[in-house]
Amino acid sequence: MIELKRLRQVVALADSGNFARAAQALHMSQPALSRSIQDLEKQLGAPLFERPPREIRPTSLGALIVEEGRELLRRAAALDAAIADHRGLSRTVVFGSGLYSNVTLVPRAIAAFAAQQPDVQVKVMAGGWRDCRDLLERGAMDFFIGERTDDEHAEAYRERPLRERQGCVVVRKGHPLSALPACTLADIAQYPFAGARLPERIARHFPRKAKLGRPDSGGKLLVPRFEAYSWTAISAIVQDSDAVAFGSASLVAESGGALVCLDVVLPWLRYVGAVVWRAERGLSSSAQSFADVAIEIDATLPD
Image 1: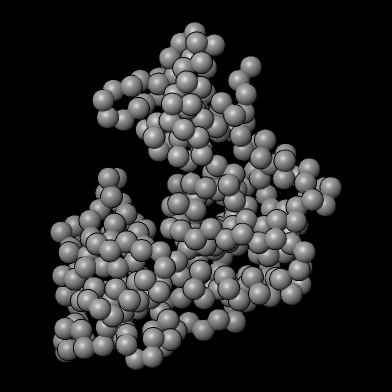
Image 2: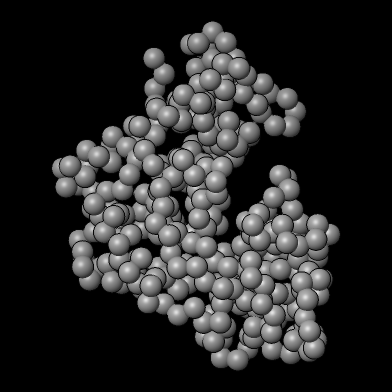
């Protein structure tokens, strides 16, 4: 019988393709992870991973264990959460937050939730929506607030949508783009982008050779020239350079005139957010209460 601990290690190694990254994600040393995987392979009498020079890949047996192991880990996490909820022990809410929700929505939601349920501990893990989804997969958080799931993964998740909001292109006051009589997407693409990685629905509108950044290894995400997940950092970068960012009129208004929105409307540049959680795990009563508060507050925020 394979222990859940070993299953987590196999899945983490398959996801990362690298012992060092997997060990870091599992909070253990690389030699310890390597020994544990070798011990499991001896127990099963067959290798679980091919070990070429660059990226580690699962063998056919390894792929089988990864596929079935994911489901077992999800069910184990769901059982733990259900037991804790039944016993009234789910007094901690752990969730992820994307860049923009972390600036506007999350602080207000936490304050309101604390007033309602002061005994519940709340932990926020800020990061990109891809990072949040990976942590959600591993059971490291209850849900995340960020980019909605795509059709490819829709069945594995449940979500409660937030209000869609039109975004704007943000530059410093006096930026060369602000002097153009009619700024175009081609003009914007000539400048570096500061912000989080952009989902395919936005990245696909930019030419592949845009100076904003570069495509990721899969060719779907736009990796910014200046990648950051803090609006404070992004704002500082934009104010002190010719970089552009994507934000909202309300965020720009808080800059005291140092930032401006370009006079161009890109209909596809919209924030499409949601509260997202794993379908088979569900939400504890505390997590559900926090989601209710967040959605209620989101409806009152300015565009």
